[in-house]
Length: 405
Image (cartoon, rainbow, N blue to C red):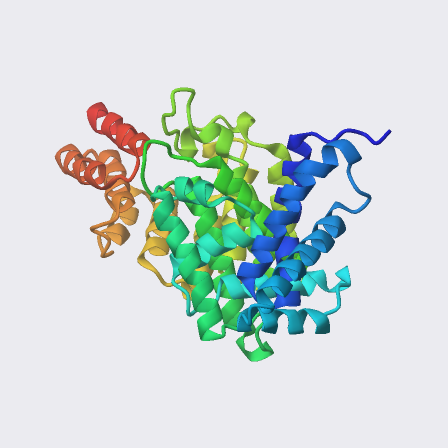
């Protein structure tokens, strides 16, 4: 008797293998729409058959083979009605082998297709989550707080643009690779950041997006093991994710880094992230994600906030600024300088920045002014930060800080 398969086990296979199957079928048929529809039909068949028949020896192979057969049957029907697109897809399928040995390249091709620079950034995010993450349109829409119909329209239009513009389903040429890799990493980190520090709404954290971004980060490292920035991004996300249990109180309130109970940090994620940072350091090819990961590793080395090696963090920001010369990085550096040289030195750097529309600019100014006993100015800075804060948790925290004055 075959072992029974639960709906949860089928769902786990779906999440693990969906992107792989879509990648293979996209190569076989040269069309993302056909590939995705066929894989979805295959998983519907799995839900019907696996509970009684048991899990096949190779679930991924079963899904890919079933999806290919379903797609060919459908395309034959459509080709008989002189559907030119169906005829072209059938011709390509005949010429494409089905071996799974090329699946590494297939997923890379799919990642670069989803993150093509001609697509808008929000569309790249949606496609990456849909085709590589296997998230439903409903889940993606909910995560980014947009109507489901809006998200569905974005995804449909993106696939249509890929087809109409002839966006190639391939890994970029070597000369284009560094720039395109940066774009891919930026999309994954944007997904993580939306989960780690939500851009709107009541909740500060959306854990499902953090975990999905880390899963995609692990995939990128497995596909591009010689790309140090991919390793750096994974390390950065792991070290930040390690602090998630301590960032929010039982009532959903924000707990800033200096006040967190570090015993709640995930020791396993800290250890993995630090090992990846050491791996990056051994390569000696620094980049912005590696340096941000190193900064977070320094924070994770300290048993409590008072033990933080702020001088090391300032040095790392000095290396990061040439790579990412943005006011936000300069603001973060100013925070570190304030810990080394005092709040007056930090405030002088902060006041030189043009970040009046950024709530953390005002929140950091308020904290430095408070430490300098300039309370009326600190109150005004807190008021500005509260008006701009994106989430309820952050507004509540800033309001409490203002009242404490």
